[in-house]
Length: 264
Image (cartoon, rainbow, N blue to C red):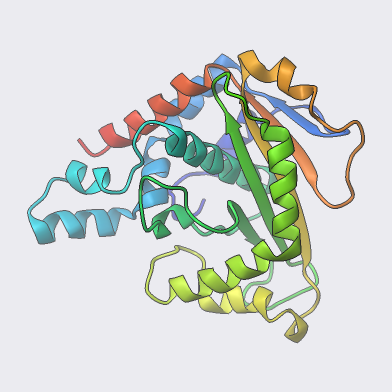
């Protein structure tokens, strides 16, 4: 459990691996999606603003909680779909490390414009079993996430793989520095400056493993066609994860609506 107030052990059954090679394939069922829709409302809301800041803003300005939350959540459309994919990627990475503790910044709180995606690497987690003491068991997990919920002319698998390369070359490093600057004035939950410094100032600590994922979240109806773009061999540099979600467009709209309803 992290500052989303969610036990990620409950999310482990959401992500059954149908295969692991040459890429990971997760096929969510309608039953698993129903569990997700019921469980994600409050955690999704907290991805954008903490309960304390939500209440404080409402009290300070004489607004309802719904008014304040509406200033944070994206409108229906491409940004909402992309945000849902990223949050699902966050839940996936957290669930895959369970019962270990994956520490992740909620970068959606750092948006300058709610109608646009958050900048930098999509999903980042830190594994630090002996925190605050650095060890050779420490890891950074970084995922690039692409979403396809409609029959548009996009290639989420290829795009996720291509942008994952940007994380490996330079974007993850710049993301860590950006997070350190933002955490000085923003609430990133369990992520603090000493934690970030451990991974930024790598030469001062034991080597930390970096693991990269290219994640494609795809509507179940589109999956067969999109899998034709998947590589035939696994990469040593990243893991491709394809997550199939029934009725993806309906699902992400329902989850965001549940988040809005959670403060009414």
